[in-house]
Length: 95
Image 1 (spheres, helix red, strand yellow):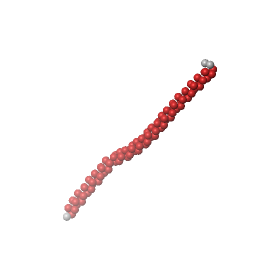
Image 2: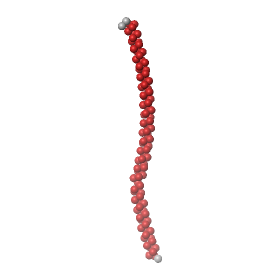
Image 3: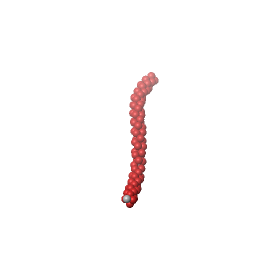
Image 4: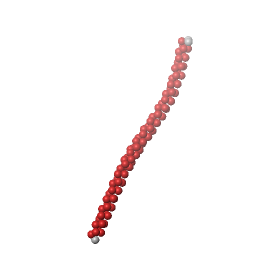
């Protein structure tokens, strides 16, 4: 009976060692995946920040385009007034 008990313990020890070796191998294999998951999470956060910045810049560009259009209109209006004033001055001077 002692021999069977010893054989069972030996098989149990062997199985336990194999289990621990497999667990260690699995842990080592999973470490790079955990790092990849962290990198992917960081990349997703950076992408969200870049997307937010892009949207902010697009809105600012739209504001600047509207401002440029308004300034162009004002510039043309001023140009017309100056041309009229110059024409009046020339008329007054007899040129």
